Length: 159
Image 1 (spheres, one colour):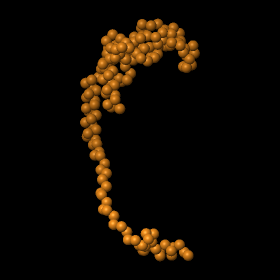
Image 2 (cartoon, helix red, strand yellow; image 1 turned 90 degrees about the horizontal axis):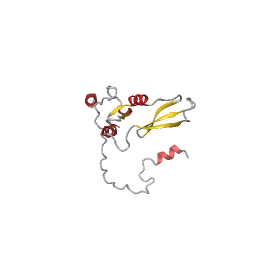
Image 3 (cartoon, one colour; image 1 turned 45 degrees about the horizontal axis):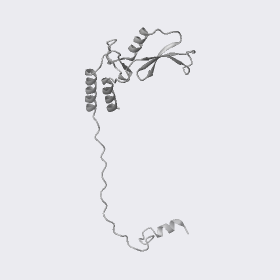
Image 4 (cartoon, helix red, strand yellow; image 1 turned 30 degrees about the vertical axis):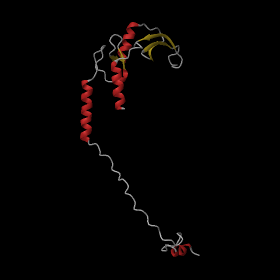
């Protein structure tokens, strides 16, 4: 028997595969919620937000106590020893270079928790092997500057 002929024989019949019973009346379907995409942000709104952000940054931009230049990147600052206000990381390294004299093969390195170290490498090309000759406490462990809390709050709101 040809498959096409067999399939034509049962196409219009309501008795095929339902045992000759009439279809049961189904309850009317409840309408599905319609997806409505959120309204798009206009370019005007984006410009207004960017203007507000730049005005806020201009009004709240800290200035380095050592060099007097504005601090653009708050992630690369450290607290001043005297006042606790933010200063450039490079300015802190310059202060350390004036206070401590380095021997051949020694460099300053930030070792975390507000501390610097004088690091000695026998082979300057081998960055894995080194020894810390001196630890310099820069920030007090028990004091946390207020500007750091504000920076952390702003960072967590933006990112």
